[in-house]
Image (cartoon, rainbow, N blue to C red; front, side, top):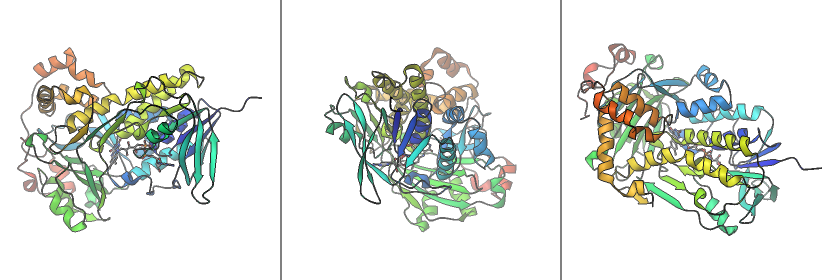
Length: 476
Ligand SMILES: Cc1cc2nc3c(=O)[nH]c(=O)nc-3n(C[C@H](O)[C@H](O)[C@H](O)COP(=O)(O)OP(=O)(O)OC[C@H]3O[C@@H](n4cnc5c(N)ncnc54)[C@H](O)[C@@H]3O)c2cc1C
């Protein structure tokens, strides 16, 4: 009698849960190995420190999640998550000035990360076909350079080690993945790695906004201007599922960051426009400041190895992690899960298929990688160790073109539509070089520059904000 096929997923975070869900469609048993106890509610946990900061799930990722778990997005919206239409429901000072609030083309889901993870995890595990080994730490892969046959884990309560055998192992253990180390122990040649690190850091507090805030006040975003050749400072006020505001202030290397509660508001006043600070001043703080300094773009290239061990895949942040400001990590992981599903449908988990599946998964991270990394190299003090020719050559011409697009996109509706499709990962980055887009850049009607935040009188009244305090945008 043959053994039931077994898939093991390393890490029970966002990518791990989506990968486990996909695997359960193609193998008979799935085990998720996770260091934490996964909470049965919207609670923080040690292995997901990013959960204390703002998260948006772009519509591209949301659509994939909804395909894998039908009705999931409505369920999240019914439970309070906010659907923010880009750009109707968002007031943004971009590097190039205030964005006109064109009718929405794409959207982003806004809610706390513990809430999102919990709701999705609950649905994934409800099928009953996935076992989670909590409080278990991954130690090593077992097998050899040609084939991975399982993992060695350690029970964190008893200290006991155990070997788990599997037909397929998926590494989704996040930014801290030890994959390179595990592979070198199997004598697999070193994986190539690119790093582009603008030194991003986040500081976040949760606030109770004024009573009207939950009833339709837009999300607010004030960005840095990379052209100033000084460290960048950013601030956002994003609505959450429980009616609160999450305020995240962030910066690139050298701009400092508020680490104490009493520094938070003064720091917000140093952004390019006072809108974020004005909103904070109207709200009541509910939490102390939480700080995170994990934001480099980092990418591995398993697809470049001539020999990749059968029975092993890597996805999520373990494969490629991005500067979080672009909000691409979760959607990128969802794209990888969808690619895994397609490959497993095509070839199953039979021998000889893993390298191709890994190539398909790796292809999904290229657009978010190049989008984030090519923007970050423009910030002063950015450190990089990359051989990607798109980041190392032709920087001036590339930046001039991308500045032109950014300038047009905030004032021209059809251009903005295409750009929004690309930044939401709905359309490929190559769309921005298409003749259709270049023609739009020349022909589309360009609206006048906005000199102040495009908030309506009704919106200002919702939060009791005086129009005068928001006049005088710093955008150019
Ligand atoms: C500050 C910040 C803000 C962000 N904002 C956004 C955003 O707005 N939108 C967006 O799409 N993305 C955002 N991201 C990125 C997003 O958080 C990640 O892309 C996403 O969590 C990746 O999921 P993952 O499952 O690959 O990794 P993780 O979510 O980090 O999960 C990895 C899991 O593996 C477990 N684990 C790790 N090592 C071991 C081990 N040895 N043994 C057992 N278990 C282990 C961990 O406990 C964890 O549960 C942000 C990231 C940061 C840091």
